[in-house]
Length: 113
Image (tube, rainbow, N blue to C red; front, side, top):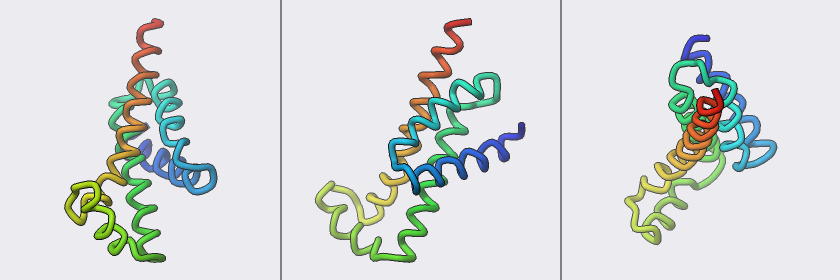
């Protein structure tokens, strides 16, 4: 399967599960992807990229519906971040969750062989 197709499929899965189930499905999807795609090229990067894109899309959707910029300007100084920092952390968080879960399960599967 082509890398672009894998990212799009994972993007859709992460987006739908995040909306209907919750944020904790991101590492679950990453872990399952690490097992399923162990033989594919760069399963860790694929899981991380798809999760980051999914949450960036969700953040964009939320920005259309609410005052995301005002929230970021209010919360970012509390976290010692620039105004755009909260949005960056919001996208980085699922990338790290999915990527590390995929890495752990991929490594565990490779070790069993």
